[in-house]
Image 1 (cartoon, rainbow, N blue to C red):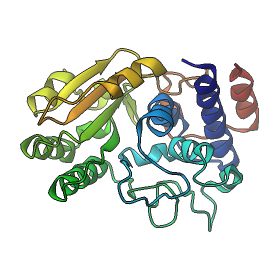
Image 2: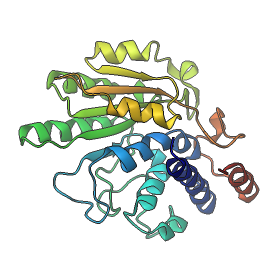
Image 3: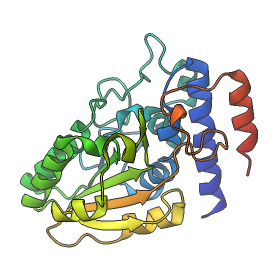
Image 4: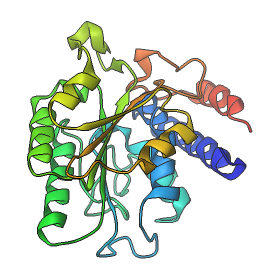
Amino acid sequence: MEATIRSTCTQVRRDIINMTAAAGCGHPGGSLSVVEALVALYYEKMNIDPQNPKMEDRDRFVLSKGHAAPALYAVLGERGFFSTEEFKDFRQYGSFLQGHPDMKRCPGVDASTGSLGQGISIAAGMALGAKAQGKSYQVYTIIGDGESQEGLVWEACMAAAHYKLDNLTVILDNNGLQIDGSNDEVMSLGDVGAKFAAFGMDVVPVANGNDYDEVLAALNKPHTPGKPKLIWMKTTKGKGVSFMENQVGWHGKAPNAEQRDQALAEMVE
């Protein structure tokens, strides 16, 4: 990983902690686990223009696990879609940085999400629309492993395979934890890679989804013609903050001032 990218990932993590601490609410755990994936998409992979967020042939991104909005906002702000000064108003009345992404108000957001399972369906629809119009843009979405207990996720995969959406990349954030406990305790996904493959996805495993180079290599792997791609990345919930890592309690709890300072002190180059 280049030093500039490492610095960007660190800054995005600092933004997540600062935003949630200032608001006194939010979802730091699952935001911290997807930092490398979002930075790879917005800094190296996607065809986008921060000065023209609605560029017609831009690549599209859908945050299906919409509660990880702090991570998306941090990347959009650092990338220049809007001023990072907006971070201080996260989840405040009147701010366009609400608890879940709002495509009508927030620059760079392509889909409003939050109801789990629906984002991947929106992404599949976007990819199908691109095919129907003869457009070459790519569609990317990040889904959660807890979210993958939703039947709608599997319907979307089945549809994506049926319509041969090789312009769709689904990124599974497999951090093993959800709001009520571990995935295995709440509702085990079993061999999730085999399941996605059985539903027609071209599965690309990533052993460490918090290793930037591994994630970027998976994103750069060419699509199998006629097949949607599923990047199955194993991640650490709360990555980068020692007392948050692999702790289910940090799914939807903001750090207090002391915890914020401790977290920020750990985030050095």
